[in-house]
Image 1: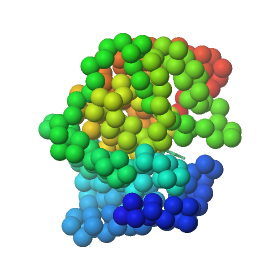
Image 2: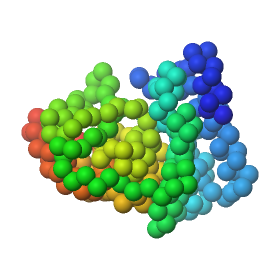
Image 3: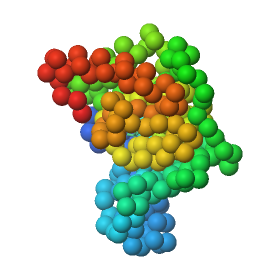
Length: 252
Ligand code: 2AM
Ligand code: CA
């Protein structure tokens, strides 16, 4: 479905939801399709979608991002995905991240591991920051934003091998889970961007936290790694967080 829309390229109708926040016809159509399918099979479940908000239901909740990486999608770039998580009693139990243009489907079930196109996946075994490649993103940056990712990038970049910016948090998390990246970090994401990817990473042996290594703010401050480099990144970020706090900036 997303590939069919992608074939229409620049003919797609694209709107700006908020500053820098794109939504195409395809986002709306894919979400409508997913909500209908879930509603038919599980009429009692709650659904929280990026484009349509909350649909009421019981203690089982679906978090859906019809197209994560809309900017890449509307520019004909392959790093976008459909991200679906199922949450029971507040915990993600099932996750799917499908990247059609990459031909990749990541799946995870709590306690039962993660797979890529059916094959089990595991995070990378690299332990040193100097060997590590991490992805990031800049969804946090608006014209007036004061607390941004830039100082974190500036401080981390000299210590790692390189950085990537693919544009879909869900795909970035799939890359951490499959060992292609040692980590991913970003500020100010939403639960539907990362809920599925978090479970994929954790079931592949990795670790997901906020910038301080805890779980409290882990949607607004996303740090996911292979686990081996996690504390080293948290230590670098601690210096930056201290300096930003000293400037009177409040963390998200
Ligand atoms: P999206 O394409 O579904 O909006 C890229 O940096 C990542 O940030 C993508 O996962 C993208 O998801 C997300 N993103 C972009 N703008 C955002 C916003 N305003 N709020 C939260 N997440 C955003
Ligand atoms: Ca998203």
